[in-house]
Length: 351
Image (cartoon, rainbow, N blue to C red):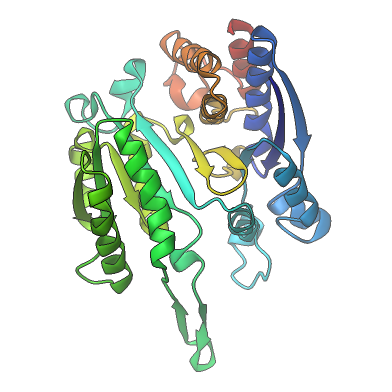
């Protein structure tokens, strides 16, 4: 198979972890006789520095022409520490999601047998956890009307959803539940928010089309508690943009490290694959960042191309590295640690 992949390294540790995912992907392609053409493009702070825009039209054209997008991370302290900045790296991420039609973020959460005792949560609470949070990406408070009033002393952000936006996300949730354990949880705040009441009534109306799926409805604050108490009671969860942003980061601690969790963003056009961690600017250029989440995101990409054996080869070599202690310093706990680039080389060689 010939694949054209857009490569958006982004900021901070993005370029370093992306390089390792490329090494591993190229090793898989060579082993299974595929051909990958990589098309690099700028985004985030790197794009602002170069052209003044966090998601340039040139980058969008590269993404639209690609079969998929492999993405690193964006963000830089010089923007985080300047509340008056008019252009920010994160604006590029929102623009990219909107222009590429990436309305659903798929975030799996699972445990690694060799790391289960490194999680801050007790083994008996997390063992067997295998859940997916499906987060709506292009609606809600991140895209609603916002502004300042009263000479800047009052600020507002508006959470807006249409029934159609909820239906397309929920449809993917129901379909995913059908392929798994036929359990779906709709996470909202329907006791307070009108937008959440629309979510709940929309999903309830869709239940008749998926009679085999058992649907539950839970408030987001209760889920935030139960997610660290009984995570293996969940399977597929669907929720709006802000709630999903928070819950998925909370869920990442179940595995023991945010540096291990992959994700995919899907929608109407090109699919995008990325680690769930941020740009981690403190580690940028030090060759110490954990690349495994990005490597596993590449595995999700191969899986979606229906290259299941190739995807499993990546997952197997990641599990091998963890069980044999071939890890970066965040997981070494005083033992031998490998540089980001060394781990990428080891993974590629072992494939």
